[in-house]
Image (cartoon, rainbow, N blue to C red; front, side, top):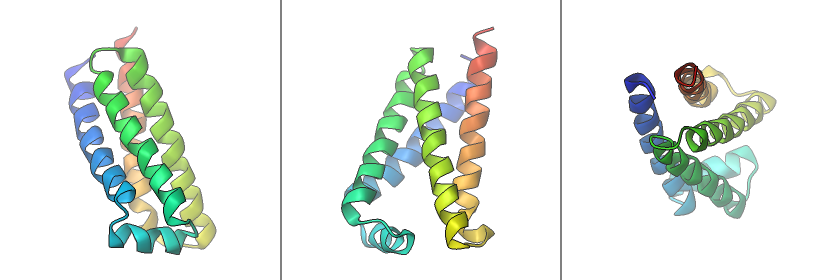
Length: 118
């Protein structure tokens, strides 16, 4: 693993640990976002669990590349789903930009992982 991939993995893990924990704990802003997106709080908590699992997978990926790549792929799927939800609702760029930026960062991490295995 390259230094860039490792730094990106740690930064992404921190982001998804924070976001996932906020969803799991059902903090008020997350409850509002869940309602706005049409999700129940329970469904949003499950999404938070997936985000935390992905973050842990990215950290494990520092030592086991395959686990990190699988975690990154899972997070990319979650972010694609988030982007689809935003676009279906007709949200503007300010609403879907975080999902898009995080998705691009996860994609960059996956590319770096792929290049490191060659």
